Image (cartoon, rainbow, N blue to C red; front, side, top):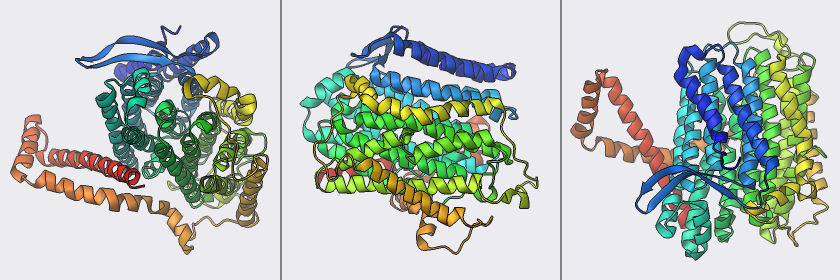
Length: 632
């Protein structure tokens, strides 16, 4: 079975090929094939998991991919404890999302193509986590970026969807520059990009080179996982259908950055500066996402910023090195359950409310949608860390590890993680109250297209996956954490989980302190939104902190000022310095293709500008990171 591990990728890849090439002939059964291929990979993954020992990694070469003199890259797969855990998450949660999509996309004429893109997404993510080299990882990395672009921009009649898809694509290119340069450095100094060779030779490099590689890898991780300063694409990605949001946030794209850092543990173990920067990025991002989540009324965007914050917890954990690698993966797995359940629950609410996303127009839906309410409620309790549900075990373990640092690091990182837990309790309780409790505000208004609201429970094909995910939201945390079950399993891949012998607070106090802080957040939300009626119209006369949070704490403005505008100036100079040469070439291409030269020229110039902007943005961030390390 190990030798045939390529089947894990082949099933969804074949499904994508059939659905995208087969065309309208596959319309009648395309959605069934899309589900079957991912389920087949999940079953095969279970067979691998239960039928093998993962004390050592097993590398399998499928064929020679890039045989160019010194650069020898095989299309090879590595099955070990870390990769098989991700395989089960991607295909297991992915299967549930595929099944849910049958009902959610039932009225879409292009449902077959949608499932083809979902299959492509899953196949690319499997290549990413199963590849046995950084070049293989990069192949899956770019495949995930392509699939996300296609799915975020699914509603082609919405300009906002097209903009969001392009934004996600370009901001990820910025991060990809860092990942690509890290791979170049590996090949230059080690002569290989394979995991086995890189990890065996990384210790022979100078500390400066190791730190540079670690920071470049982090830049790539920030792009895919929506971490500061590349976080602003992730909330905009909510323009895609809700199953896409669930797949991106729970099982595929945003988990890739955490996987990259954990996979590169032998590199980060050698650079304390690199780990410190990872921890700082995670701590800052988890607070940033939680604060912004308090200000939005769009149910999907609240959940999106919740993902930014929760991934920040995971990045904080992997930044702690051997103290946190396994804890990050544990929280990633439980997050896969409760975040997928929350997004699918949000989709169920939208399905019942004429695709409305404004929580101010909801209210009292627990009476109309009891299954959605129950499953969503369990996901809510899990994410806020309610005692003995999943988040209580995994998120609190990260907070405890953060407080286990000595000196200022324990107070800063532990304090940030603890504060974010309280804010999470606030904004998630606000979401629950506005959506499922209180006055039925939807009775007094109509949807944007003039229809009245008639909320109802979703069909079983949508609610059944939500029930399964709710079970995971309840039980997964205890199963993974108690007895160090997951940590012991992951030891061959990421090393043994270490426990801090010191720290700034007693370990036994931290879980209950976290529960108390979360409870304060819940109580504050109930005081503000549970005891009084919420107006349908969003108040505009609000305090400055609320205005700032509504503007994403000026994240877009910061990127625009520091990266986009200077890059645009440089690009314009580069493109138009020789007007005859550039424009003449573009017009020549347009004439050759027989299209409207003016429109094609604008498209070509826009592409050059956008691509150059992403490259310049990546270069700017890389230089800033290297200077930070050099002069710290």
